[in-house]
Amino acid sequence: MRILPLHQELVRYLEERGLVKKFEKQSKLFSDNINHPSLETELLEPKHLRIFSFRLDRKYRVIFIFVDRGAVEIVDINNHYRK
Image 1 (cartoon, rainbow, N blue to C red):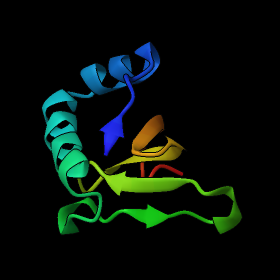
Image 2 (cartoon, one colour):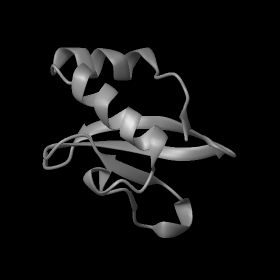
Image 3 (cartoon, rainbow, N blue to C red):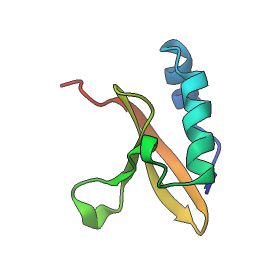
Image 4 (tube, one colour):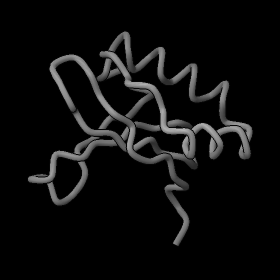
């Protein structure tokens, strides 16, 4: 699975939180196998919007959409537990 280049705001978010290496590791797993167990890839609610997430670590999630066959766009990276 190919991941389109990140928007600059998302790159800055990763850098500010020291998540660049974790993102690179999980992105590699994602590219090799979208269903890798450590990613915990899931379809988010409401399901008809076709928005997905995978785990960056216990705290952070990567939100993505399919934009083309074999390509996804990451639309957000966020703290999963922030209220």
